Structure formats: structure tokens, C-alpha cells
Length: 156
Image 1: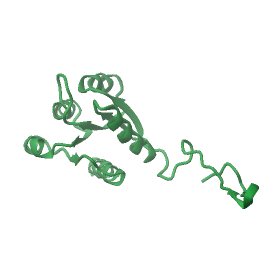
Image 2: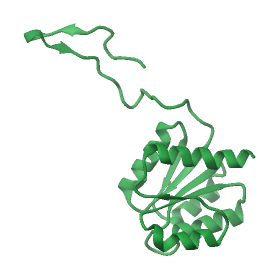
Image 3: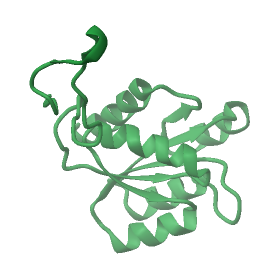
Image 4: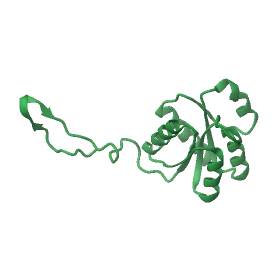
């Protein structure tokens, strides 16, 4: 970790100026990954937080605010290996439909669904292909662990 100031400097009134960190360039997570993840969530703050956690883990992240936008990105950018999608999204297609469409068109692609409403969707998620469901709110460690798990399944 690089510090902006290499030494502590004595300041007025016997207070010490502590070194500052550049939070955008200093990372504590793993090095950059070759994996690209598409985060799909209609709630901007939730999407941003999820994307930030994944970027901090070293993944390349693309964001979409709807299932329809996600479908366009998936068609344009073939390098997306994992989709992390909220189930409940307004408009036409929800996250579960996006997941099923993606798995039908690209069975090698992995999907993780997110929801703050587990009771209403757990049965629907279990009725189709095996898709992990991450319950909101989740911790950064829970998200990172779930991504590692689906990526490990891909390799086996």
C-alpha cells in the first residue's frame, strides 16, 4: 500500500499529521481478474454498491439498470462470464426471466440472483436450472464468496 506522505510530519500544537490514502488507487483485494461481471439492478444505489464490491475484488464490472438493457449488453459484449441480477425489476422482464434467457442462450454463463424478498421467489428459483439466490442485504464477503463459488463450478 502506498502512502501519499512517507513520514509523519509534526504540526502545530503537538498534533501529528497522518498519511492519507488514495482510496481509488489503493486496493486491499486481489489483483485484477480476467472475469467480467454484469450487475443488473434497477435501484442505482444498490447496483453501484454491488458493482463497487466486485470491482474491489478485482473483477471487471459492467452495469445495467434493466433486464432489457442487460440483454443488449450481453448481445454486444461476449466477454461477460457472470450475471448478478436483482429479481424484482419494474417493466417487462425480471431478473429470473433474464437468468433463464441467458442460460438458454449461453449455458456456459453463470448467474447469481439477488432479492430482498426471498419467500416470494425461492420456489420459482428452485423450479428451473440451479441458480444461486443471494439475499439482500448481503455483506461484501457473502457476495465475493458466491461469485467464487459459481466461478469454481464453471471450472469443474
